Length: 148
Image 1: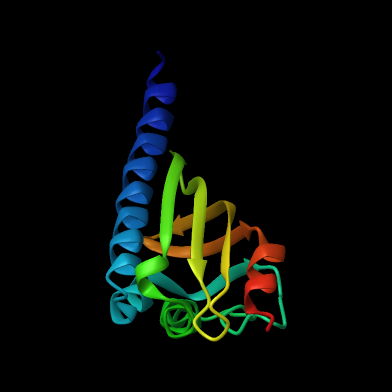
Image 2: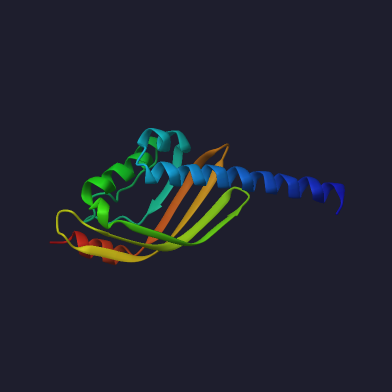
């Protein structure tokens, strides 16, 4: 390995370690529903993507760290905590990007209906803060559970 290649590899490895640490902290704060910590983890401006779904009260456009952090509280208000399940099948981190894939399920408090399906989450971390949060999920199942 050339000196330049070693420097580049070290940089990527360092970024990968830093990204994994931030994403691990994000998941810990999310599980604890720690909005203050989530606000610290999200950047001031976030590239947030979650398909707009007008019948789902916790899904709406967001762009600031505080708005992104509040999504967990909104989800908790509208779903039954005891029924929430998330399993992770894949957790890949390279450089500043993390991809997490798995399965999620829950129950909407207002309707008593359940939702479930696979998800994929793409996060980007810059300077120790999440700057991109793109979540892809079974939005049809979530919308059906929210519809009386």
